[in-house]
Amino acid sequence: MKLYNTLTRTKEEFVPLEEGKVKMYVCGPTVYNYIHIGNARPFIMFDTLRRYLEYRGFDVTYVQNFTDVDDKIIKRSHEENITPEEVANKYINEYFVDADGLGIKRADVHPRVTDNIQQIIDFVKELEEKGYAYESNGDVYFDTKKFEGYGKLSKQNQDDLEAGARIEVNSQKRHPMDFVLWKAKKEGEPGWESPWGEGRPGWHIECSVMSNRYLGETIDIHAGGQDLTFPHHENEIAQSEARSGKTFSNYWVHNGYININNEKMSKSLGNFFTVREISEKYDLEIVRFFMLSAHYRNPVNFSDEMLAQAKAGFERLYNAKEKLEFTIENLKEGSLTEGEKDLVSELNSYRDKFINAMEDDLNTADAISAIFELSKFINTNVNENSSLEFAKLCLDEFNELTSVLNIVNKKNDDILDEEIENLIQKRVDAKKNKDYKLADEIRQELLERGIILEDTRQGTKWKRA
Image 1 (cartoon, rainbow, N blue to C red):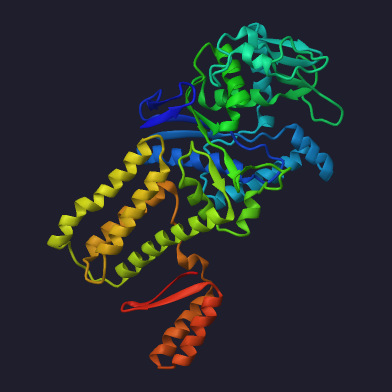
Image 2: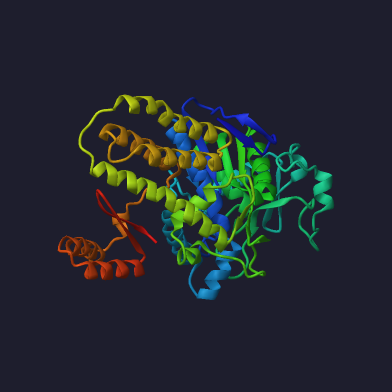
């Protein structure tokens, strides 16, 4: 498999540190609110990378943190008159609601900053002892001038970075690009005892510490949104490699930005949407499908129109699966015919196309195209005259590929309540009794509820409107 490594700006063959095993860290949310659609993209894309690696036989250890102490969390706690811990607990729970809706698998470890305070203090002390960190009025800063490779991820040198930096008035820092490792406590903030006085961690230090604690000093893949490249990931590299003297991560993988209606997403423009808000209009599985329909490194334009297009394409896949399952239910036992034996190699070719796409820097867009081609093949070659063995081979192939992306995996029966099921059966009975007026009335009622019926030789089928 080849992955685009932000560190080298090239697609590289992925070779893990240990054969058959992958250590992967993905930056998680700061839990002060519901996650927004911009957060959703890296969570979906790197969940998919993890799933694909597991599909290819790798044992993946996947760590995604929660930032549960932060200025925004403190601000929210004051607004809601609850503790920062209560704010964090609330929005961690809400994250999992949205993550489940988006089909995101739980990480092997979801560490929280507040559970790693001692490890953070020890990490900062080591940096201080090695001359890479210094204390100033209870704050502790990383001295970027001391780390020779600073800027290697973002491909910027120190002079260029400093020229563009906003130099703080009365700054306690030695150099403009120095960043805080430990913050002295201010009134109304949570704090922990440390060698530098009561305080709390800076933002950048947490991921280095938690990655080190749960995955080791060198990992295979560190991933996140493109906006994290600088300064967050740049600073992670500096503090991690300064402390250990080893490469922090062999592969740095970043997804592209999301625009809303061709504009950058921001609260000031009024185009800032949470996943929870979007879920009120669309099934979140459609959002996942939409995100996977573009290459992860490309920018994505998110709009109602684009989601509606994704929904239409997505339903074609569901309808193909449902048609195939319906056909299988009505087929008798039977082995492959001679003609079907000739089709098996073509059937298998779609898996090859899918894998080739995914192996090429996680090209989910082309992988989905392969699934659509497979769907067309199935619609063309499976019918009431097919053998049961061939039809099942087709379904197995379809399910295998869609399961890697974790799409098209719900059952229509899951959304049918007992009343609707009874109405469908009532219409079937009405037609048997030649009460066509009642049958038409029931069809119309179901249509108004978003259920479309289709009468076939094998019986009545249904799909979502």
